[in-house]
Amino acid sequence: AQSVTQLGSHVSVSEGALVLLRCNYSSSVPPYLFWYVQYPNQGLQLLLKYTSAATLVKGINGFEAEFKKSETSFHLTKPSAHMSDAAEYFCAVSDQDSSYKLIFGSGTRLLVRP
Amino acid sequence: KAGVTQTPRYLIKTRGQQVTLSCSPISGHRSVSWYQQTPGQGLQFLFEYFSETQRNKGNFPGRFSGRQFSNSRSEMNVSTLELGDSALYLCASSLQGRETQYFGPGTRLLVL
Image 1 (cartoon, each protein chain N blue to C red):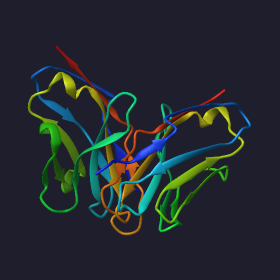
Image 2 (cartoon, rainbow over the protein chains, first blue to last red; image 1 turned 45 degrees about the vertical axis):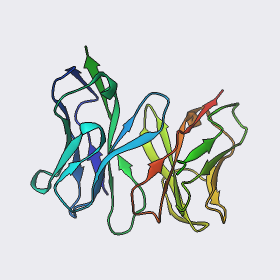
Image 3 (tube, rainbow over the protein chains, first blue to last red; image 1 turned 180 degrees about the vertical axis):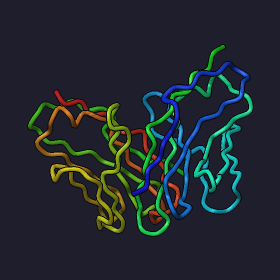
């Protein structure tokens, strides 16, 4: 079965610093991969997705992620953190072949220090 | 285009009661999925509907059920509520299921 691991339940960065949120998946076949963000008391907002096109995916709000098959990773980065980036971030995977469901990682809460 | 809407946004029930939550997908989207979010278990898939048919189901007891109407709107029902059912219930829609899922704001259910 597919699984997603997000290293670090909390990540703290200073405003203007690099943001790196880690995600590893388990799959023998490259899946569809997603990053979602959740602000307090809100639903999930799609940041970006990988669907076997370019390995470097650019998303909204300056975020990007690189798909690395050899490392089964899909880490999320942003060159310069902004206070408004403080939120919880979820990595998710879906099967290409049969499943219509998303399997989520446990989430990483990003704290941005002024 | 309007996003996914969910009603009600907040709900308080007592153990043993039942509850129905509603989800209206983005116009033109025919697939609706439901997820439960709790601090302990995280985000877990409940079920997915397409053209009024359940295509996929997560590992939840039979107390959790759903349906989809001809206009793609969906409802989920939880019977005989337990304290552990307290959660944020999220609905997501997509065109046909395998594409990007767009989430609603969720319904926060508190079971007392």
